[in-house]
Image 1 (cartoon, rainbow, N blue to C red):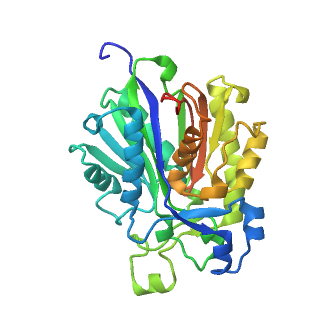
Image 2 (image 1 turned 90 degrees about the vertical axis):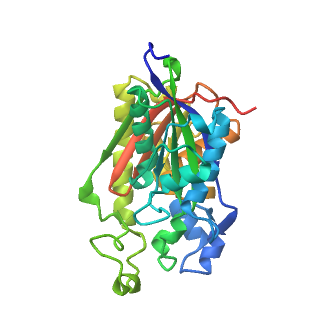
Amino acid sequence: MSNKILYASFKSIGAYIPKKILTNQDLEKMVDTSDEWISKRTGIKERHIADSDEVTSDLGVKAAEIAIQRAGINKTEIDALICATISPDHFCMPSTANLIAHKLGLNPITSFDISAACTGFIYALNIAKSFIESGSFKNVLIIGAEKLSSIIDYQDRGTCILFGDGAGAAIIQATDKKEEAIIDVHTSADGSYSDYLITPGGGSAEPCSLKVIENRRQFMKMQGNATFKVAVKTLTKDVKDILEKNRISAEEVKHFIPHQANYRIIKAVGDALKMTTKQVVVTAHKYGNTSAASIPMAINDIWESGRLKKGELMLLDTFGGGLTWASALLPFAGGTKS
């Protein structure tokens, strides 16, 4: 393989969904909201919540073990591990990736976290693609893992109705088969919108203090309506750009997998691209918004249902705090579920 051109392929997918379910009816008892209000505005019916003794790295490990097994490789073959998260085990070290690598029993390898909020998994995909195409690594484990329940204010009805916990993982593998290659990845960010989605307390701007805790500044804050407007506009443009650049039509996309933030956003972008309901993957109703875990959990969902098959073209599209956004065009290079 060393004498041939190396491509990066999306070899396998795995996910872990915590067992505990928080329904809209449960939230009705916690904040001033209703199942009708949540369903109409977000499309979310329930979200999964990790146990009190589970941390983000535990979720990541469980998703990773499935992805490794499905890729048909040994753990010793993994060269690098990238974890995308905004709810790490610790602020700010060691990285959650370091802890996942240790819990998996991996050899000492390159492992690090990235912070790109809901866009994190595609940022990790882009980095893994570059690592492999450069010849640096052959098997990169990428993970999106979140215990968002640990940074959500369950007194704030604007955020607590949206988010859930979970993890997704994939093996990005070197190949000399061009038909298996990740076609393209776009990543971008604009810090001028940083206050749209922010966890204000706990960093150097607002170090942890009694005042920060009393004002609940350690929890995620969001400007929902403003974020919605920018998200629809940005996601639609980014997808149109990546399709046009690669001369691929929307009709050729078998699976359009957008970030599962809100059904209204998913529908608005899907409609703008003239995607059919059969093309658009929706899991928001049962998992809510799981940030960096959203995209891999959705891919895993269609793989496990038998809907995603080897060689089929996927279009990924996501948007998150930062603000960050990204898209990717790639065939699924793994096996079809038997």
